[in-house]
Image 1: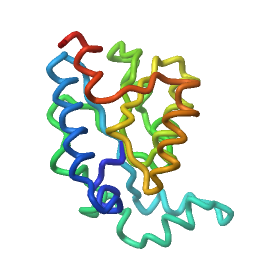
Image 2 (image 1 turned 60 degrees about the horizontal axis):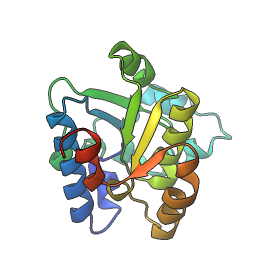
Image 3 (image 1 turned 90 degrees about the vertical axis):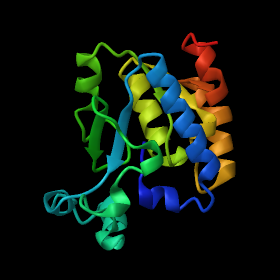
Amino acid sequence: MDYQNGVVDMLGEPEDLLSRAEDAIATVRRAGGVVGYVRVAFEDEDLESFPPTSGMGRRVGAAGTALRNDSPSTAVHDRVAPEPGDIIVRKVRVGAFSTTDLDAQLRERGIDTLILAGISTSGVVLSTVRDADDRDYRVLVLADATADREPEVHEFLTERIFPRQADVITVADLDALLGGG
């Protein structure tokens, strides 16, 4: 989630994270799983819908054109880019579900387990873990394919908060979990 050019660039040194995300995607594909992409990007009508009290509206407004739907910074990073048949949704809030049809697409395909990775742990991942659990999905978080600009926040969430609603695993655990090892 949010593995977009502009978001990845905020991390400074994303190479190891991108490599782990690539490995996770390849593992899911080999196991016959569905890969989904969630990206944040805005059209004019999205921007106009924010009330004056919206903190999200202020943050998006401050970003200028960087978060526009047609901006290269909102495109999924080439190293983890979608392939035909993948689920792709565009969101206009922090979590993956509230402003998308992601839940409907997952249910249509009979998906009941989500393996989450994303940037940032304290934003999209936290919001999506909580919402997915409320929607009765089995939730797994790939701790080492998830990142936050504040490493101590990432560590706290993956070690103390997420285990209340999700299984926290690593990319190395994924192959065995999906039956490959």
